[in-house]
Length: 312
Ligand SMILES: NC(=O)c1ccc[n+]([C@@H]2O[C@H](COP(=O)([O-])OP(=O)(O)OC[C@H]3O[C@@H](n4cnc5c(N)ncnc54)[C@H](OP(=O)(O)O)[C@@H]3O)[C@@H](O)[C@H]2O)c1
Image (tube, rainbow, N blue to C red):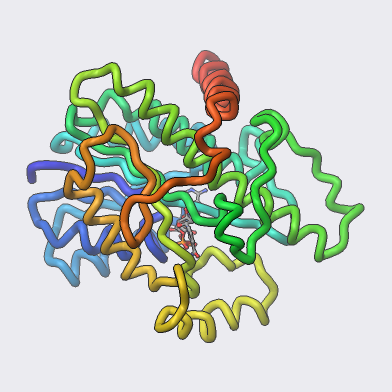
């Protein structure tokens, strides 16, 4: 084995397809880091069987719990695997039925999609190879100009996103859905803000490590709609996938995974950071380049993890 790649959320959807493609190179060790143990073991066994790569490992990781993230990094270090070539921060959630919180009390969409990955990246930075890569799976829903079915992000401060009150009782199902979708698109904006700020910080180092954000396009059929009502889940799993044949910016997880893996394995740009879609490099939203938002998100997130690490 020459190198190691970690992918979060590799048990299903985009992450699973990407892990399977990456595992085709038997000299690469793949670490699938995932919340659900059963899903993880199933994915690992399936990938091993289909690729004959025996260096596919599954590790428990709950991005909604700082303790679990720290334990994951300890477990990873103890294995003494070959150099970490890429960290693919791919796991993502969307909740539209009620507000949920992480173990440390942050709103779960922000907590898992952004803050958990922020801590994970922070703890793994020293393990990344000099020419390594960090790829964050973002989404086109963060771009208002794409007019996706998901409402546009609302970013005031990171603190407001992290500590929103749970006044769900005052809201009907339509309002709860809107609230959950806005949290989701905003968390995807956070993925891009984080990408640019981290790249800037790392650009002063040797190498430097590339930090990229990826929009896989809409990928109907994945587990992302699991919190939606049964009828919508049915359409998401059985009807919308047909749109991949005709739809604009609608792809199968396999199609998007191919592009993601191409960017993981090849140096597609010499820049230290980029935002890319299935069709190639693109501009992200105007808001994502806003230095004040990048700084606000960074300083809030840094403060949370530093305080927690001091007491852990
Ligand atoms: N589907 C789309 O249309 C679409 C469009 C644009 C961007 N994206 C992005 O693509 C990425 C992958 O989504 P997907 O559509 O492939 O969804 P998916 O099928 O639901 O996969 C999500 C993965 O994240 C894992 N996960 C969820 N919560 C976690 C936690 N707390 N800790 C660790 N792992 C956790 C899940 O693991 P379990 O098995 O444990 O549940 C699963 O493996 C996400 O970042 C999403 O925002 C999706």
